[in-house]
Structure formats: C-alpha cells, structure tokens
Length: 71
Image (cartoon, rainbow, N blue to C red; front, side):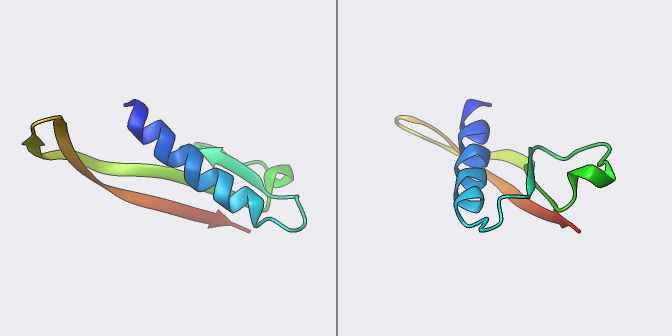
C-alpha cells in the first residue's frame, strides 16, 4: 500500500535527520539478513495492518509501527 510506504519513508527521514554521526544503516522494511558492516542499523516496518472502518472519502486503517535497532 502506498500510504504504508509514505509512513515508513517519513519515519526514516526523521530518524536520518537525528543521526548525528551519519553511520547508521536504515532499512525500509524488516531485513532478512544484516551484515556486520551494516551495523548500527535501524529497520522501520508496519505489521498487522487492517481496515477498521469506511468513511466518505476512503477507508480507515490501523497498523503496528515497528522501529527495530540493531547494534
């Protein structure tokens, strides 16, 4: 879903702005494998997305936002 991509991109952009050293690897989604050279790393993803209702201009969704830190 495109809104999920927008949410992840917005969170990653905010986290990157706060990355003072600039050495953090950011993943848009949960990585299957993380190499040691990728550390430190942050993964941002959504799970349990479900439609919770319908409004005049579209559906309402809820999801769980995950921000995982790998050191």
